[in-house]
Image: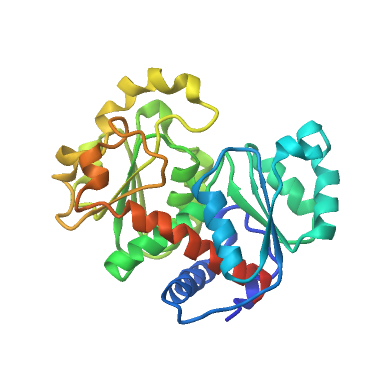
Length: 307
């Protein structure tokens, strides 16, 4: 069952997978979800989360418990890292206790420091730059609905944030047509776009636009996220008028493929980036997407631990 090339690796970004490895993890996630494969372990997963979390925390915990392992929730507010202990010291200590560590943090550089000073696998459970674990679940959900990834057109609407970055990279690796509709001043990091173009599989396309209607025309997947990410709450009200035309609603859906699905990584601000009708309607696959966080991350744990 083990994906040999991933054993012991760090996954700090979605492009830390090769295209073949990403496909293999997604296949394994489906096998774990169906019950076709049932690996067991007696390993310990540490969760070190500097940011609030519901889905990431619970899905990682449930996945590890279902594998037979244990989870330690290393809340920074009650550990020495919250009192200023250097990451280098924390990483070397946790390396002696744990088998694998998922870190949810602000700076991507902090993840790299954990990876440099700990020998156990380090997983990016979210940073300000990327959210690779979310995109594993997104790709699994899209594949479940269309039985393929290559050639599928996905439109992301809203802020060019960490979720958008990983989605662009993952979609390009899978040969998808990725359209990103954002206001001009909120586009994704140009370095991410350049990286995606460099690693894109055959048939992949990456289109940036500020026109949401053109972006969703004929699209099979509509994806959105909050307009102000964690740490940007003071900007939320000011962004509403800027992003209003990018709201996923019935009018926008009317321009998409008739069988299009709607995704949102949650939590959702209903009435802002998505309407209640869109998230609860027939096109929504948001709850399947949320469930698949557990299955996709279980596949990642199995692969990195070599189970």
